Image 1 (cartoon, one colour):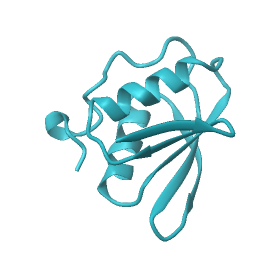
Image 2 (cartoon, rainbow, N blue to C red):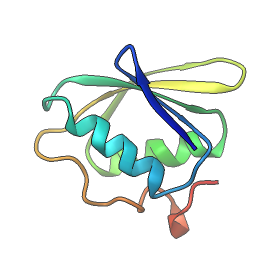
Image 3 (tube, rainbow, N blue to C red):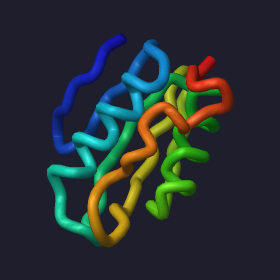
Image 4 (cartoon, rainbow, N blue to C red):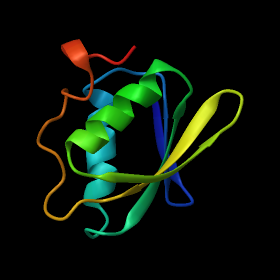
Length: 96
């Protein structure tokens, strides 16, 4: 899995839950509630799983952009602390 930050974006490629969601939580934890972050993930089922997990934790996806092989999501962090639900972003605990 690749997880890197650049231009305030978290780039996630490959990997499975809970590692992906742990990286997202750490990135969201670095910003104040109400601020936004950009997440970039491989197109496909992984994006749907990440979106479900973010929404379940109360974060708001305020925009998405797609290209041929990736999707970027702009996410507004919820009030309070980041998720303690790591690994619950997708059924069975692994993104496909």
